[in-house]
Length: 191
Length: 130
View (tube, helix red, strand yellow):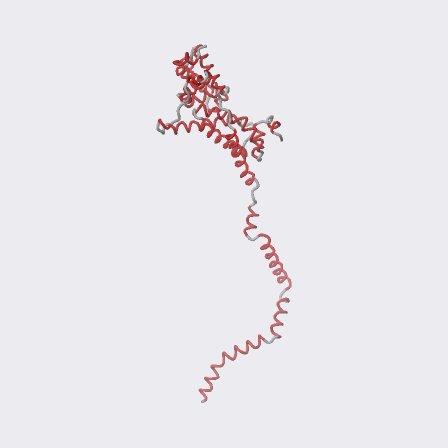
């Protein structure tokens, strides 16, 4: 079946085809889900290389699960977000045991401010603020405000209640607002 | 209660929304190298499953362990001969016995054995008589 036709198929059908060795089904699933996993991992870790490692590992686990995949039981996107957020959490916990100077610099520390556009500055400032959030708040905020998931889906990803997600989001937003407050004027966030 | 305590002002909310919008636009694209690596993993992950997907039955493994078709043919031949001997009595072997007896080899052997057994007695008798 050609690639364009496969893009119309559901994840469940594509997973079955992938289990049978259909390379085009794997390509569709990759293009459908890997960018979102990469974005989540990047926002969680603040490091492009590590985010790519996590994305590859999460997708590999999806391929390995393909033969036992039960249609209708779980959404591939939810499943992948859960795997990726757990992988990121593991990496963040390992980092705590690493010397501070070995941790990659935050994204906003690399290029000088006058070389970047305002939008890039804003994105970098947000990333730096995200890096300071507790892990679960960070997952909830990224999934809600950057990936556009609804609270019930976030609850499924994080294996918790919707109420707990709402609480995580409220605390996360408050912490982000506080972290961005000193630079709001400079970043043009008030207009 | 928690949400009320953690609520932010509309101004802060607007500022956050602008920052979120900028971050959404700055999402990293999936590189060709990463896509290729993911697809390589997909091929490798599917290949073993296809091989394992058609397991060899236990009896086929046992059959091959015992020698397969050559061993089976030899066993069938031996079994057929055994059944023929069982139903046909000793007739086939009787013919073989006749051949051996007619050749005189059996008699010669018996004679030789008798000579060897009694040779010592002859010597003893001669010495006593002497």
